[in-house]
Amino acid sequence: MNLDLDENARPHPYVPAPGDVVLDAATHKVGRVMDRMCQLVQLRPLNGGLEWDASPLDLTPAPSPAPHSAVALQAAVAQVNALSRRIGGT
Image 1 (cartoon, helix red, strand yellow):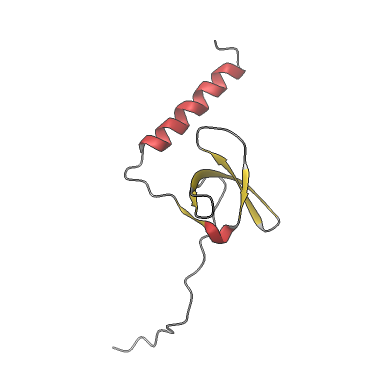
Image 2 (tube, one colour):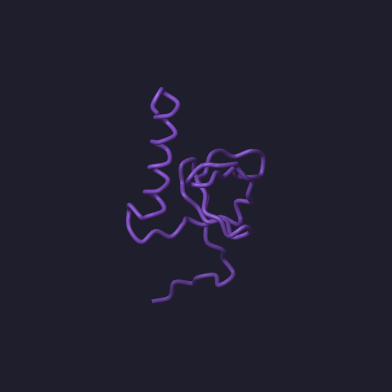
């Protein structure tokens, strides 16, 4: 069986979508995709904070040992806490 694969062919690049959790190889940080501006992707730390710009070529899906990993759970709790403060919580 001959598949005639081109050994120089590149796999399709990963195209992150808003909401994806990604690893930025340039900064070694994990962030959530917020938006795309020109040729850059805007990321925000999972537990909140300042966004940073990243090249899409540096991004890969963040590894996750389970659907509700500790990092994802921490980010979800931070989001709920921030929302409760905005709507009049303590």
